[in-house]
Structure formats: structure tokens, C-alpha cells
Length: 366
Ligand code: NAD
Ligand code: DAU
Image (cartoon, rainbow, N blue to C red; front, top):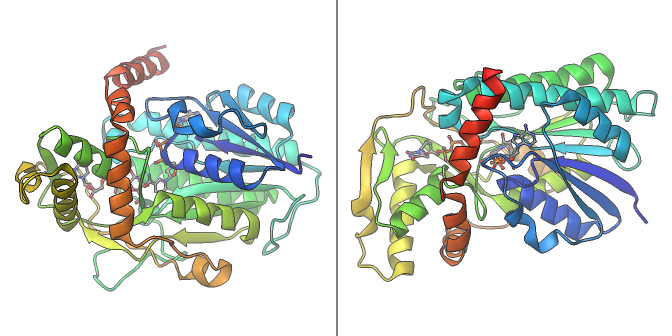
């Protein structure tokens, strides 16, 4: 028997596919509807292992299409939403900022409107209440980038850190977070937001640092390090993020924000050198061979210096903690990419690039 129906948006993407897999496997009594437009970043191959499960449904569609989103809510009567669909790459946001406004801001507001209309009149959990079934919940997945860049070495982002987004990507995510809170404050929509640090692991599109560098090392291509490689990121294994989303969806307090991170800061250059050593070992190459591919290139415009999450709230309140040490997670990640070269070849074939360009042109030249 189905006890609740959850809409997961962006479920064919990197993090979304791990969230869908976890929910579909863990909750046989839930119906999971994965809504994804399958942009260049979405790939149904990420979910081959669960695509025939009876509690899983895939719907291809665009969250920027308000009428379609409203119709979907009418069709499935969702009890909850876990919203991950987004344009997610900072470098693309610098060249295509409007695309980020469309998906991350307009798309989120379309979902909020549809949830508000569908859930109007139903009993809603009040602030601080745990969103146990059958109450509704709109769970918005966001990023630590909304907080801007840390400059003091001992400082961390907490849930009360002021927003200070620096890139078009983080500005669009910050805007969507504000809309989610505004719908809670204005209309009483039951919401929860999480802001997570950099994820790594299987199925990440190779425009992001780790899969790009693994791919380039494998193919003896240069490793383009932005600036001096001194920027610091806080890395979390993607399955641990999915586990945190599960915790917050079921036990998080309505109206709250939770930061998610691994207390695992790495300077880019140190991380890249570690990756090079792991790759040399895995590929049977002499130590130092991969590191010779490091090439310093022009820095990313407005490049945030350091992100670091204080994850004490989710750890203390909900008992979540990362399951993997970074070195172990990195080994697993490298092993996955080396044994899934067909996946990498497929997504780097150039098809996605053409699709992206057409999509962009179609949307903004009409
Ligand atoms: P991703 O780019 O890998 O996946 C995004 C997914 O959204 C893709 O499957 C894509 O097809 C889909 N999508 C894009 N536009 C859509 C639209 N208009 N309608 C329907 N579907 C659409 O992203 P990701 O890295 O998995 O990130 C997922 C979410 O988590 C994002 O909201 C991102 O801001 C957030 N986040 C990511 C990280 C990270 O390190 N990757 C960290 C913290 C938060
Ligand atoms: O912090 C969470 C964010 O992490 C998410 O919200 C974003 O969706 C996700 O893309 C990620 O953003 P970053 O910009 O930190 O990730 P990226 O992998 O693009 O870059 C990581 C660091 O590596 C960053 O300091 C830029 C640098 N870099 C990246 C690339 C792609 C390079 O030096 N060279 C590169 O080629």
C-alpha cells in the first residue's frame, strides 16, 4: 500500500539520482515520482538499477513550465516535494546567467505555487513540528555558496550566517531560498531548507572538478587549476548527502534550515595532488606522472576563496554524521569512474553540448 507520494525534482542528476535510489530502496510503501527535464546534466542511466521498481515513476518535464507543474500536482496529489532540479555549475552561470534565473528562481517559484494551491486548506504542521506523514512538506535543497566566501581561517558557515552570494549561480540559489522562506512566512507553506557543501562521488557530470580531473588524468590531458589553486572547499560524499536529506525529510523541523557538511576542508591544490597520487597508483603509472598534467589557468571570475560548513545542528539535532572518511570516499569515487568509462564517454561525447546550446537558443530567441 502506498503511504505517501513524493515528488523528487532533478532526480536524473548527480545528487538527485542518489536521493531517488535511497528513497526507492528504503521506502517500498512510498511512491517516488522523479521529475526531470533531462538537460545535459540529467541522465537516466544514473538510475538503471531502480527504473523498473513498482514504487518509482519517471516524468520528463520542465519546472519552468507553470501549467505543466500545476497539472502534475493535480495528477499525483503529492504529499511531499524534495526539490533538487537546478542549473548547478558556477562556470556556466558566468556565461549563461539567465538560464540560472529561469530554472533556479522561476522553476522553484512554479513548484511553490503548485504546492501552495494543491495543499491549501489541508492541515499543515506548525513551526518546529516534525513533518511526519500525513503532513505535507516542501523540502528545498540548496548550497553553502549562498553564504559567500569565508575570509577568516577559523570561521564557518552556520545557519544564521548572512547571505552574501557572489556568482550568478549562488545568487539564483539564494533567491530561490528567499522565495521558499517567503512562502512559509506569507502562506504558511510547510518548508525545510538544507544548505550543503561540495559533493563528490559517482555520476557527477565531468564539468565539476573531481570527475573532470579523473577523466583528464586517464586521457593524459591537462588539469586546469584555476588561479593558484588556493581556494578551499569542504567535501562530502554524495551518499552521505542523500542520507542527510532522508533524515531531514523525515525528522527535520518545519520552517528550519540545516547546514550539511563533512568538516572536511581541502585546498584545491592539495586535493588535486592527492587525486594524482591515487590515480598514479590505480593506473599503475610512476608516482608523479599525473601531477605533471597540472596546468595553472586564468582564475574563475569572482572565485570564492573558502567554504566551510558548521554541521553541528544536523549532527546534534538529528543524529546525522558522514559515514565515510574522505580518503576512503575518494578511492571509491576513482574506482567508480575507472570502471564506468562507458558512462564518462557517453556524457562527454559532445551530444550534451549540442543539446544545451539548442535548448538555450530556443528558449531565448523566441
Ligand atoms: P546536476 O546539475 O547534476 O543535476 C540537476 C538536474 O536537474 C539534472 O538532472 C537536470 O536535468 C535537472 N534539471 C535542470 N533544469 C531542469 C528543469 N528546468 N526542469 C526539470 N529538471 C531540470 O546538479 P547536482 O549537482 O545534482 O545538484 C542538485 C541540487 O543540489 C541543486 O539544487 C544544487 O544547487 C544543489 N547542491 C549541489 C551541490 C554539489 O556539490 N553538486 C552541493 C550543494 C547543493
Ligand atoms: O559548495 C557547493 C557547490 O559546489 C554546489 O552548490 C555547486 O553546484 C557545485 O558545482 C560546487 O561548486 P564549486 O564551484 O565549488 O565546484 P567545482 O567542481 O566547479 O569547483 C571546485 C573548485 O575547483 C573550485 O574552487 C573551482 C576549482 N576548479 C574547478 C574546475 C571545474 C578548478 O580549479 N578547475 C576546474 O577545471
